[in-house]
Image 1 (tube, rainbow, N blue to C red):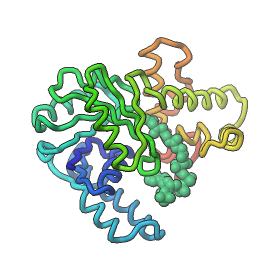
Image 2 (cartoon, protein in one colour; image 1 turned 45 degrees about the horizontal axis):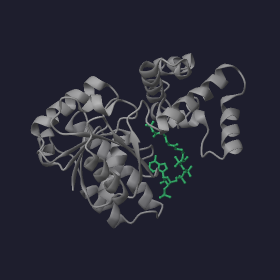
Image 3 (tube, rainbow, N blue to C red; image 1 turned 180 degrees about the vertical axis):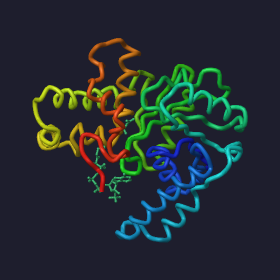
Length: 278
Ligand code: CAA
């Protein structure tokens, strides 16, 4: 199968890797061919580290990378599946999908990796039906895919993505469209609450995370988790939850807004509530 992945950030690179690992061809797209190539180089560097650690053979690494292609936009015309994971802005997604709708073959499946936006709205006006295929970070390590049915998503499409998720080694859950779906409706307010506890001076960032790791057996605390997800993403999802429901329980803590304005986004920027600069 040929999969065109639009957006080569943390999620897009991980999605391309997972499909290529299972023998599919993954086209990797970013803002330009040069930028997509830089993301492919980053992926190659991370896979080479796995080889050096003896967790992957050189042969598997080379084969996987040979299936990740950096091409011009037009190469997506004969893709069987398009997965968009560009910025969480409705206009950005709609503009890209509108252009793809015009060039992709009729049988192509359009999926969105959106973490909280409406699949129905993303797909409105397109001739290709739209489905949600929501992966988790880090994509190669996280087993779950939320398969989201929008108001106009055909049942067969949901079934197809469910089966495909199993085929690429993931466990799907089918979710009806709702702001934040299942995971982010629960997880993102949890990260926000971690920041509230810090903001109220209840405990230090280190101790909040130790408390949740050792008290609840979570692999990482809410502040490190927000650092992994990116506080810009956390803030964006909190704002979607709030704007869609007007329920005050989804109000983002002001400290998150301040962190985002300061560029302290977490691991990807080198600093969040913890420091990742080498
Ligand atoms: N990219 C690729 N693979 C990674 C990785 C990364 N950034 N980080 C870890 N892994 C892989 C490792 O390669 C390893 O796999 P192998 O055994 O096959 O080599 C496996 O994950 C475990 O890694 P480690 O032993 O190095 O590290 P760990 O045991 O500390 O686990 C973790 C790291 C998997 C990230 C773990 O801390 C964890 O599960 N954290 C919670 C992550 C989480 O909740 N993610 C959801 C975020 S929400 C989201 O994504 C949705 C959204 O829309 C915002």
